[in-house]
Image 1 (cartoon, rainbow, N blue to C red):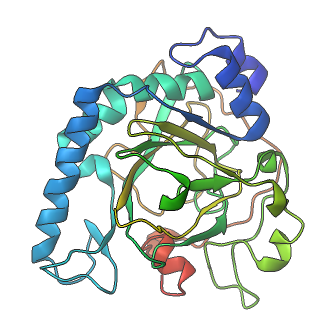
Image 2: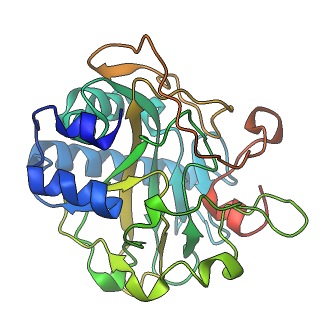
Length: 295
């Protein structure tokens, strides 16, 4: 669906101003949308998995671990395939207000793609370089949106997600180095003309929902506080968007319709998209391992 098609449908959760701002800039930060019981549950589950990670020595299908991970001092960078880790994560993704927010941004027929829970620990270890999401999991159109939920207050000094307004209407960059190896990041040369003087931090209190279009250039800086920053991330698309390469982190629910009905016709956007590695063969760790040169 086009933005005009989507806006023709009544909003479920977001205001018309918020929806139009998302389509104009390629992102949105909307506080106060997640009910406290859900926020409390997500935080409780997050704490339980951090505690579970104490028994894990190296990264596995559940955890992407940082180099400083120890039983006494966990360092989980990512809880992978989130909706497969506990039924309540899938309930949140499919039954809560989050799927209605997705419908406000991709149209009434909504398809689930993937999810994870990222942690930004104090210090510089979890800096995320500038990138776009769609080159890692290309679709037939550019409706896919990542909806993030801040599980704690995220001020500017805690390394919030940062976006370049309007970049979703610009080029889709190759996320590889000069030798063709996947880096998960846009090169410094390409970023030089991308508008780094116009970046905007997506800050907000606990429960803030951030929405980032799949073509939007975004990154996050170091966490300069003493507190970890957890953000749960869920990817949705319009039902008429179809992945044309294997997903890097597929879940048991990838491709399920969570609002509306399945598409009978695919929407094909003619804008070219670079081809990523075949993740079904290459394997995928996380954006942290990719950007640090170790898939």
